[in-house]
Length: 507
Image: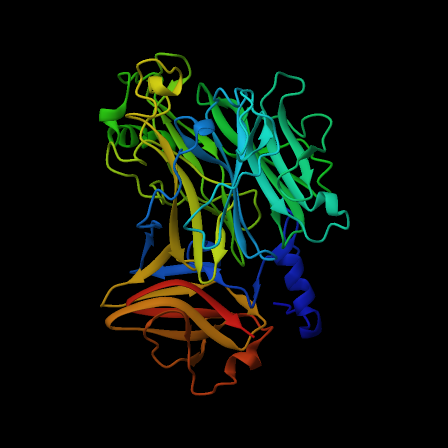
């Protein structure tokens, strides 16, 4: 095996980790990990597992949920996080763009603006920049005929008028209607940038800026035939300049495993459904995509929509839920778990029926925060289609809440008291100190072995124990890993009453 010269290692690592999507890595083996955290959620680095199990860890709901409700006259009966949340580091302020249903003030839908100092307690400042159809003033609406506002703040753009960028769906008839780009100096006054829709899409589109790849990424909804049914699926398109977007290609399509679980998901909300099942129509589709950019991979939170029948007032009936996916290249997505990563509320609770998310989850200190929209109705419930006698604002509503994780603790690989092992692929790293994102139980421990590319043991660590995001591994020779930087080695973790969420060889 030819090893990279150490002088070229870091440059080559950057190529591997941030190579443009759709292309093959310059080098596939050994896996170049530099000093970046490798998540158990992403099994690319795993060669073999003995007696260990993988566990999905749903987010922890904030006890104050829902954090935001429809409480302004112009918002009507519900609000949704059909938009985005960001933390403005310059102003030390959380900012949210969200929507309500069509209302007399804004009959063509509007995007609203809210702020928070702590991300928990939200204000709706009277900074509205568009006109209300009723002449209402002091509102917080900032974009008209506009849904799914994926807002990004770009402090590097030399044009201060383009400090904020947005991809959103314009709610107008074609050819004008569709996904467009916008810019703004302050996130409140928006100017459309695109002259025509940036790509084909069926309404829902979410977008974000990928700092590592230095590209804008958008996920448009694309309908296509899947096993005899036209279904909601999602593609991907990217742009380096926010101006040119190539034809999207499919990346999220339901598979047979999704369809096989449809009935289970329907039964979970059976009392809420408005029509009986039609086995010929029951199926799974995708409704939206949210991402979290980790150090070595991208985590997605797809909205998985389960259809049990056609609804009484058109469209489709059924619930959705937020699941989990992961990718290293944005093209190939692994979905080992087909269950909610955002816990569903009990039937009748505010988040028991339909879910939405922003376009991106946030890292806040040593946590990952995912805001989400929850509703206590399903997709085809009459309140979603008409007002009279359907319980809008009385029995049914939609609000916004929050779930959190400790940093990168989405999935763990677990070892029982009897012990288990996880062995990595051959790796090349650039750091000197092995750190584990791990938790051990009573009497538990993690011992790490370093193996050469033939599987021979080069070193064995002291037992490590604790529940921490940065559990430092100690060796008889503390300079060991520094000597092996740039070499092809594997790590073997011996887990006893332990959960391993991630590891990194830090500088």
